[in-house]
Amino acid sequence: MKTKRRANTTAESTTLKFSAEFVSVKSLAVNWDCSRTTVSRILEEAGVRPYYFGSGPKGAKRYLKTDVERFLRSVPHPE
Image (cartoon, rainbow, N blue to C red; front, side, top):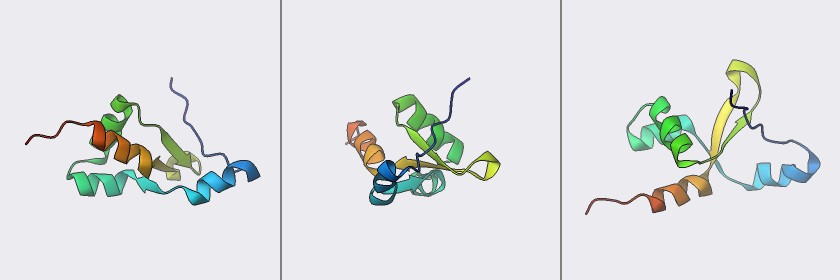
């Protein structure tokens, strides 16, 4: 079973939490015109690390915007 990575809220990592831009699975699904499940599957297969804020079923799953942009640059685009 995979362990979920939780965003650390200690004083040391608070800088990362507030200075980094995160993007939601829902907003990526809207931009990519696909389901949230597809977004999660694609990014998981690509090795893009998710971050979880909160706990339980209401916890928010987010990705670092820079990680998603790096992934998109690495994908070959048809010309």
